[in-house]
Length: 321
Image (cartoon, rainbow, N blue to C red; front, side, top):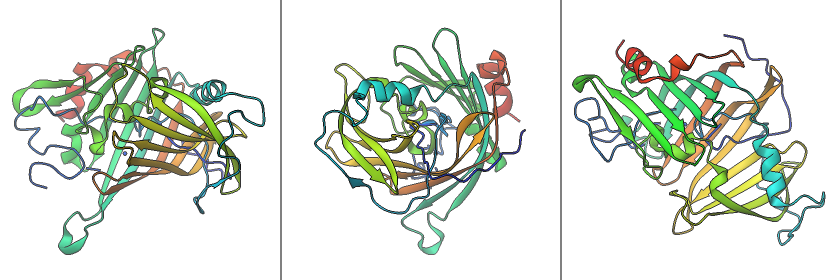
């Protein structure tokens, strides 16, 4: 693996996908501890967006220093003349690698830390991503430490029409759990498959609501409303996108009651092999009162990853070690 070249910058980015926490039966972040013993139809699968998605799209970063300051919150067009669709198109174009491999660690904390309950947990995982010629996005999440987490390895396929398939292997029954529910929160770290699939901004109609300055970085503020017929737990998505390079600086996901359910912020990034890459980012899961801190340790791009890496056979192999 290539060692990351750390580059400090004033830019910041957010993986919507999301470009990641998990006692009894449920561990507080969406994983069922019974999954290895008995499959449940309602349970989606443990998978990696860094993805939302641990997706791990290319992006820039910033040091979090304070709240954003709106300049013209009621603006309907940007000072550069770009409209919302053009800004979103430029943002999505940042994810320009054919494939990527990111090795990362995650620290999960909760609000209740008394008497050792919900004590911080440290995990290590690797996320593999590959864009296929037919428009599919393939994601493999492999937990590497601690060893008992391996049965939570997962495989995600994002189809061009927005459908998502999440798969996990269960050793006790020698079978695969398959879920196609984009709204379930039972996937990785209590996140939905949509978040692991970079947030799927294509599911939203965006309007430009103004321009802001976020820690000294000029940004566009975009308001996204879920398209009719689109499947999502989040009816509203608010993005702050850098005016300098169109990297997302912040993302907020709102539920059906218009209450903020997630907040994703990247605090450091670097340029690796010509790709802006998140090095450190945080996801606040307000619904589950959990925070997940991610840090990338190694990253490689365009390594011609084999399609065999993203198969159920390989998933079974790595989850059964």
